[in-house]
Image 1 (cartoon, protein in one colour):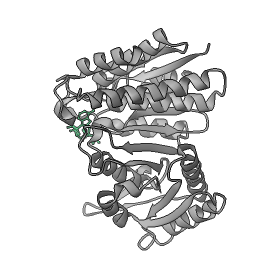
Image 2 (tube, rainbow, N blue to C red):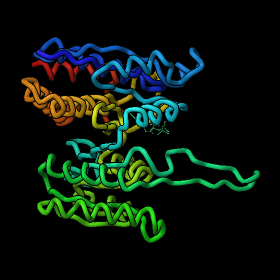
Image 3 (cartoon, protein in one colour):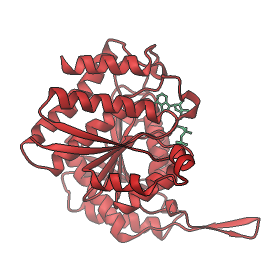
Image 4 (cartoon, helix red, strand yellow):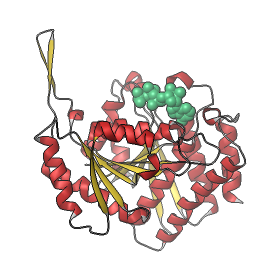
Length: 345
Ligand code: ATP
């Protein structure tokens, strides 16, 4: 039996509530299945900045480096000083954000099952902004062939892994960003040739944003750059009922961080009403990544546990046992309790 060490970032706003729910789920899995998780809590974010004058203190960074994988609750105002640093350090080049319709959750369409595969290291997120006096700013956007190739390859492999519609749409704005996005588009076309079994198309980002509302069920894998992926994945989450059900993974060759798509949601902090499903589904993604990475005896078990997490959510939703954001009346702790009870029986 393998033990996996999980660094758990507590975060800010609704972060600590979600971290608690995530911890309870991992502890239950450790108790009732053959897979064991050693959870190490990590302080990072606004609270850490106040306490230690650094949003990602060195000792927190070291704990994350020593772990097998990181599970991160949302961080508040200083999210960029935490997640952007971690994404760069661990070279987490792929940001994977699935969006799926679930029963009894208001969705624009009942058959949505898509994933946004977002380039995670470049674009405008490098923060290269330079003021020109007080009245103007120049911002630089980086696109490299290497990062474009890596993310395109990931998107096609993901289409095969999912085994669904096997459809990749490359989303860009090459009619305006004629050099960078034309390169991104050309590279995705080159990679597409290696995957004849995957249907490939391209879309400008504005058309894609519209079609996500008009025909969300037609999408399978959306391959795109950093900023467009950030925006389209929030839109996709809302199409299927809101951010409370939206998980994400930041994947690199050696390490990965799983986290809800949403931020710290200060408007609902300390009220015990956050939906922990985004955290539970992030844990499902984490188990699948561990299975894929450690192709050992545990792999099948980890995949089964991931499926069990999603089936537990499905079955609670079918019984209309839901948190407030998706039209139910359960609080975070109540929903977590029901989730764990259903998971282990
Ligand atoms: P950021 O700017 O970092 O994305 P934010 O706090 O502006 O963060 P989000 O946290 O992304 O916004 O979420 C937007 C809104 O969606 C929140 O204000 C909240 O009402 C709702 N929301 C987000 N996550 C959840 C959740 N897990 N459960 C319930 N409601 C949520």
